[in-house]
Amino acid sequence: MKNLINKLINLFGYKIIKVSSIDKSDLNQITRILIQNPEPIIFDVGANKGQSIERYKKLFSKPEIHSFEPNPVEVNNMKEKYKNEKKIFLNNCAVGEKEGKMDFNIMADSTHSSFKNLIPDTTWLKKRSQTAKVQPKEYRTKKVYTNLISLDDYSEKNNIQNIDILKIDTQGYEDKVLLGAEKLIKNRRIKLIQLEIIFTEIYEKPLQIYDIEKTLIPNKYKFFGTSNGGSLVSEYVYQSDFIYVSPDVYENFRLNVAV
Image (cartoon, rainbow, N blue to C red):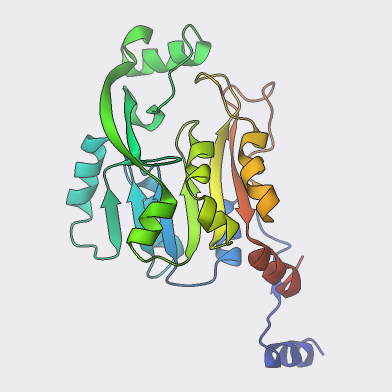
């Protein structure tokens, strides 16, 4: 009977995917279910050392990845690593609300580099400084004056009509990245958005969920899942990745996935 039902469903172009055994915090599994295009267009905002490039190369057979990273040292390293990869495009710039230039803070651990300043005298800063073997006041090693672009402008200049995945990890600058993708979001040309929100007070003026959702929810994007259900009590550094999906992706999931 199950085979007969599946055949009937397949005749109409649908398929049922059972996901009851999925790890509820495994964003890789969730991403595979939501984005089934084997050759997706992916925007990697805040590429750092290329961690997400490696992640998406494992998730998809032939992804086209556009990475954005303001740290010139890390970009040069990635250019050497991926010099033979024709579908990886490395941009030595930051992404924000509009084009311009800004000072970018390079930290002793480059994964913590940000446009935002660190809050002094926090436990986080003291521990990270000890790990890096520097004084807390030296954890920011330098500033670089970097180019800033918007995703709307970049997509228009490069004739990119649709984005399958937009990943944002910019240490507190995620809201500005979304504001610079206003046209893409308004026209629902981004299928899946994954971004990080840091709730621990590490950087000045930390983001709240509202700062993200005020751009996404009015444009019918739906919160889909998160990587971490902890709290500031249970987690020394409480941060979580959030996934939002466009209306068509959610509708496809609702119709085709059996939970």
